[in-house]
Image (tube, rainbow, N blue to C red):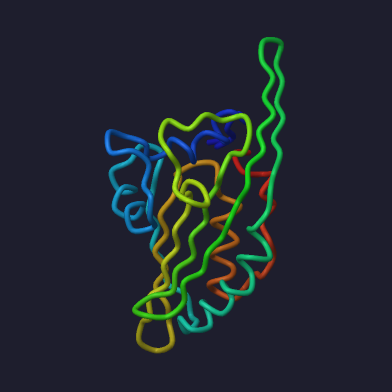
Amino acid sequence: MNQRLPATLAAGVGAVLLHGCGGMPQTAEEFRQAVPGAMLAKTDTYEVNRAVRDVATTFQRKAPECLNMSVRTVSQTTTSYQNILTEYRATVVPGGERAELHLQQLHKTGVIYPSKPPEGGAYIIVADAYPLPGNRTRMQLYGPSIGYDVVYRAIRGWASGDSLGCPDLTKIGK
């Protein structure tokens, strides 16, 4: 099945993914709690053969380098024109009982939010790394069920250490 989204849906899914009666999640924890019951959202769990401290170190190095950027999406049909500027911001929270990677997106132009987004933009992906015996790590991801495969693949590669490349954020929704 082709999971290609039109630019309008790809740009808006983060803004309205979890919007409901309570509004948009304002923290990573609210996002974690909302994803399991949200439409167009999923959780994913897998294990990697690396210590959580190594996963956290890779997240600290790669997330800012690869995910902190702006992307402009322009689409035009015979009846509409869209010009959307999206800023992506990654935050890594190492230590404690888990290492965390948060990806937020803020549409600067072209999208009207149904409620106030949190500082830094709507939470779009939260990836948690938990230590396991034998220098292994359990990854728990929360986010959209479609449109963000390039980011999920990058996070998996960073966690496993198998691929340290950056995702092409212009491919989100495609």
